[in-house]
Each structure stands twice: as structure tokens, then as C-alpha cells.
Length: 378
Image (cartoon, rainbow, N blue to C red; front, side, top):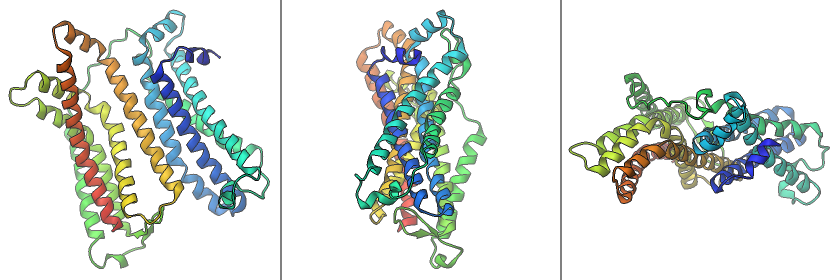
């Protein structure tokens, strides 16, 4: 009950984190229950692939839980200090945050299960009968076993996301790394170039007869194996290049006698490029795939669209959590700048310049990803 006591003192951002985690967990639980309903009326050979399609949604919930949990110590240093004074060590603090995250995921799973059982009670129409497994007996242990996975994954991801040395106040933080090893840049660049070349090779005239075409979900048609593999390499390479490109954009902002605004924006973007890159890259990839699917898809399936929207929503939540974490970590630096006489409009202009530079990088990587995805679907 102690995690529920702590919830009473939460602010709006904390309640939003709880609510977003619960909604993502409920959506993932609905996917698992749909797979169960389908499996009740179909052969066992088709039920395993349906469960495998639920893994991306499950991974998205775990990633969102990890990003949200990692931001808790930075957002609530006074609460962490109080727990430490009460005798809580780093391990128990990490366990407490993990239990709190698992409770939010469990709430969403229970709501999804209640809706599933209500719809099975002769309320759903014939279009949902196959998804709910209506007309067949529902084993009691099957939905419970499936729904335990969601809070379990969320709790484990939250516990693993918080390093032990960051779970207590007063721990000196390591300075952020601003440089990138040449291998870190060469590998994604090579992946991107090879992927582009392979996709162009797979899209050449007469390539439809090469190999076995892959049937895409959501009525997106079929695409050659070479073209699909090339796009996957291109998307992965561009995602891995997000961090170096953000750091490069920060360095370009601070070039040629920068003023206070450009200097603050460039230095901060370069320093935070690594921490911002992962959620921004996933968000950009999800939006690129969703844009290409909506533009070239023929009446896409609702479950596939919901799955992509879930990934995008989790990415938005992860970006917001990472932004709050960075803002909390830079609180002392911002206070120092204000004490030195920095005006608030200078800080606002620096934040706007930093956001503009990051948006330009994401527009470049996301535009290329969507362009090559559209080339596969045309």
C-alpha cells in the first residue's frame, strides 16, 4: 500500500504519467485478449503468430514504463531524499518505483479484461464475435496469464531503467559525453547507404519476379524481399544517426561567433543529443510508417492502425518523460544563469532555437524514412 500512499502527493505531470502508462497497458492487454479470442475459434497453428504480433505493443509499454520511471528521481529529489532518510536504500527505492509503475499497468490490464468480459456477454455485434471468441468456453486461467505479462514487463523495465547510483540524492552525476566514436557514425552511415542501394535494386524494373514477395499487413499489398530488407536497413541506419546529427546540429548552432542564444542552444543540444536521440528516433520512425501507410494503404486494418498509434503514443510519452528528466537535471544550471543576470527571454529563445534545430534533423531523417517506405508501397 505504500506506493498508493505516495500517489496522493503527485502533481499533474505524475498523474499524467500514471494515466498514460495505464492507457498503453490497456491497449496492449486488448491486443492480447483479441489474440486469445481468435485462438479460441481457430487452429493452434494460427494462434502463435497472432501472439507474436503483440510483442511490439508489449515492448512499447515496457519502453514507456522505463522512460517514465527513469525520470522520477530527477523530478522528485525531495521525495527520494525523504525515503533515503527513512532508511530506504537504492535497491528499495528502485523497487518502489517499479511497483508503482506495475500498479498503473495492472490497472489498465484489469480495465481491458472487464471490457472484454462485458462484450462477451452477448453485447458485441457479429463483427466482433471472432475477436472475442464468442460461442466458445473461456478458460479462466488463460486471460489472467496473458494479462500478468503487461504489469510484469512494465515493472521489470522500470526497475532496470533506474541505475542504482542515481536512485539516491547527492550522488555526483557524470558529465554528459558530447563526442561520438567514429565507429558510432560509420556503422549507421554504412547501414543507410547499403539499405538505400538494396532497396533501389529491389525496386528496379522486373524485380517482382525475384524471390518471394512479402505480404504486408493492413492491406498494403506485397513487396519484394530485397526492397523490404533495404528499407529496414535504411530506417535502422537513420534512427542510429539521429544522435550524431543532433550533436552536429548543436555544433552548427554555436559556430561563427555565436551570441548568447545560439551558444546556449548549441551547447545544450550537443550535450543532450544522446539522451534525446532514442525517443525522438522511435517517434520519427513511427510517424513515418504511419504517414506512408495512410497515404498508400487501402483501408488499413483497425488493429494495425491502433498498434502504430500505440507505438507513436508511447514514443510521445517517452519524449515527454525524457524532456522532463533533462529539465530537472538542468535546474541548477538554469538557476545559476538567472543569478548571473540572464534574462528569461534569452532562455526561451535558446529553447526555441534548440527545438528548431532538432526539428530540422527529425524532418530530414523522418522524411527519408517515409520517402523510402512510400517507394516500397507505390
